[in-house]
Length: 343
Ligand code: BDR
Ligand code: CA
Image (cartoon, rainbow, N blue to C red; front, side, top):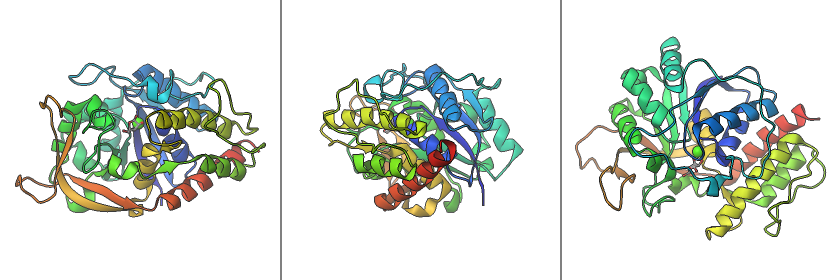
């Protein structure tokens, strides 16, 4: 069964792997890729999206441009985490593909109206575009089949402030509007939220890249090492492996420099896998809201697990999964695609 998707990203190293994962998945029918300002500027995000489509020799998938800035907050970007262009050390050739004539919010609205009840929305960046789309059409939550998003931190420290997660912290007002708009849906259609609590268990290690390269038939052995100097570039024979490896090496060093070990959290690819198959995670329903005013806690996601607010549910929070099963799947899918595209 195919899964028609709108994918909204702030590409981003892990967003890049989410795109590769979806492009490698025969059941994923990507209708449109929305670019959101976040990890890097929206123009750079869009350029990255087009470049990955080129590298994967993808069909003519629409890429839209989203808002330049969040709804209220000034834009923050994080080149420190994702590299100057958002793709770590990867140097992707600039694409000749063109951006869509419509903007991201318009694409969201027009697509869900064309295929009511069929489309899964996947957001792995700030929720700016989706909030704008919901302002245009408040029925959007009911026209989508389901929303899956990467964002938030509940019983887990934040990665942007002590209590807030990046995608929510960049545009807290957008997140607040989206959670409000998706309130009260039937339980099976509540947005699936993949917070840091679970995505930080998805630890990509150098041996995962080595296995992916092997599956792709890439020569020589792809070894990312903590000792690699910053001017080291992959010499893998396979172009997908080469660029992916250069992107991930940067991300692993970032995690190491922030005392998380020489690994990379694959937040967004995990959310992409959940969008294709929610059964890979256990879900726990709650009512989620965003702290907008706290002087220390702005952008924090708060979950009411016990109905204390007396408000309708608006989230099914991904709580447990099998990380190694996820990596087996990711390696098989992207490795097989890479082998097929660059034999
Ligand atoms: C999220 O923040 C971004 O930097 C990543 O791409 C991911 O979507 C994790 O907090
Ligand atoms: Ca992201």
